[in-house]
Length: 522
Ligand code: F6P
Image (cartoon, rainbow, N blue to C red):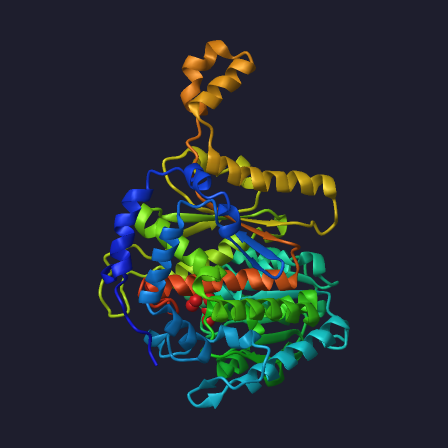
């Protein structure tokens, strides 16, 4: 069954929110804290080892009630059920949206076109497991009989960003295999990667859902030519595997049928890292860790599916984001993980959110009259404090932040970790509280800068009242990263439902591709 289409601006809650915005827009969060001494507790949620504090937002309980009412009026409950049970909610492509089935731990049937997909999902997982064990243990060898030392993931977009982010994110759990990623059609990219490699001991994983993507096919052909300088066509079966829905095209490339890992058209590219697209993750950290990663996402799926909205982490994050985007007029959101391991989280989230919700036509085919997808950006703390945070603290734009921190460091360097986390807390506090003219005045007086007060004071004032969410996780590990990514997937879904757009197609990337192809022909 298809989604119910409701223009959010026609709902009673949207109208109430517009009125309510006028009441709240000039209120400082400090007074909201003064009104409710339990605000932090009331506006915190817990899931396993993950804690979300959303108290530093320009919202009251009434705001939340109205936002959650908007979710209800948008028939979010109905949409969630259709999403998980495999209805064809990706109507423009006539497909179900079932990345959640890839991490589903139970054997209850999920039907697509009357066919239970669960057995084939589990079969492919078994194949990933067996292959991972054989490669890691050196049983599946390269063409000359040597075990593999290097793995190269060749793919782009969803066939690159997710695996790349997770392999880097979970580097601490990595085994002896070195993992490389080739994505850009820029020949220098592939050349730089190949120059380090030995064809005898390198496994190439060609990942393309469609196996028609220009970048991936061009890189794969270049790699094949390079490989054939040392090996024969017959050797391709030892050193090349593929992940795709397009079996014929993969076979045409020369990859042995046994070396093909299937995926399905009910998995969107940007949601595909849970499928065999995540093969390079499994190879890098071992299957058990990969399974823990899937389990973390599955646990978050259960939370999202079963928890009422007021205590539902993805729903809360989604509606708060809508509050800023559609009522405060914020255009972007910044995500700042306080761990160097998650340096590639922002590019991953950019595709996830912006390819999903960068739409200006609603589900009725009408041009929308309200804002949809946010601009997502970010990088790691503390590096960003020496880069773009100036603009977030004192610029003219209201930019909500997600801070992501970890209670424990992986190598246990307490001195570094305390400093890192002091910064994590300080940034949120500084954005929230700011620094008034009186405080600046006092500071300058105390430090003996009296004569500069008249000239410098205005520049040193921070107005504060700048919102942020604080996600605090015990430790970065496969399970917690799985849950974290699932939060952002479901947040994206909720926003698409409320904005009444289709989040699972991406026609917007086609025109550029067509024009590039025309230019190549001419
Ligand atoms: O950028 C468009 C897109 O279709 C993405 O959605 C997808 O992740 C990427 O290209 C790669 O596609 P494929 O896996 O089919 O090569």
